[in-house]
Image 1 (cartoon, rainbow, N blue to C red):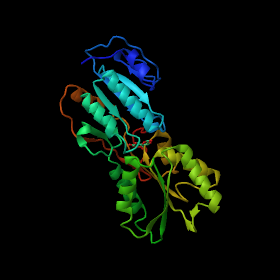
Image 2 (cartoon, helix red, strand yellow):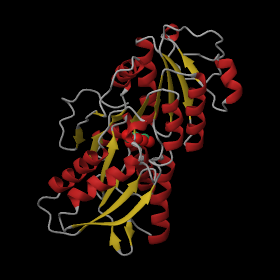
Image 3 (cartoon, helix red, strand yellow):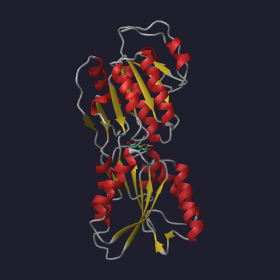
Length: 341
Ligand code: GZL
């Protein structure tokens, strides 16, 4: 397979890419550098990896995990940080095709809009692995397989915790949902799984659902806007008893504002979150968050196994799910290993 020098590709691709090789194993600093490598080491597998960005600790741990696993297996990584823009991901994938990487892995920021670029990868006979979030496509043959979490099950786990926590309550319970990035599979799945379980119980009512884009700043802003409009933690005369947040970053942002308004998070309002980042686990131990559904970002080792299989033209499983546990106020944290990322 003719491999163009990356210097040539640089002129074609706006994406700033990062070539990571085993020799850099000691540094694991994830710096975007422009790498010019006129000679490819043909023996090594080159992975083109298009990542969404750095919107949360989950995302940076996910990226770190991929780099670390690739270094351990001597796989070179062309990396692109899309800075939350699908257009940047499309450019990066096209530059990977021009550079003729062996495998492409990407985290689709949203579900739609991938068929054309995946068709180009298929025509170039480069296998594509979808990571973390899912895509909607007219042609399932356009990608080799998916590895990530089951967002629907994560939403169900969050709801099951609430059903258990309020099993003895007779009052109406009003829920505020902080959604992740709209049109992303993860936000859609978490919402769907949460509703599937929770709304079987007529005591619960989701009175408001807002997209916080998985960002801490937006979680903070949404709660501030509610206080500005309502003067309290309520919505249209319904007190908000529960906040269900699609990720820890938005939960921590919400905590920032609740503290400002003197709300006793974890007691005056129940908070259920997803991910398991260190700061959120610390808040759980302090009783400010009531439940965290773990979403494991450390997909690197499993992904690299799939990359090696695909690079050798072997079939990979269509879906590889990684599971996570549930941390809650009921845990005896003296027994729980240090968790979080
Ligand atoms: C989960 C991942 C989500 C995390 C967020 O699979 O897609 O995106 O839950 C991250 O923290 O922004």
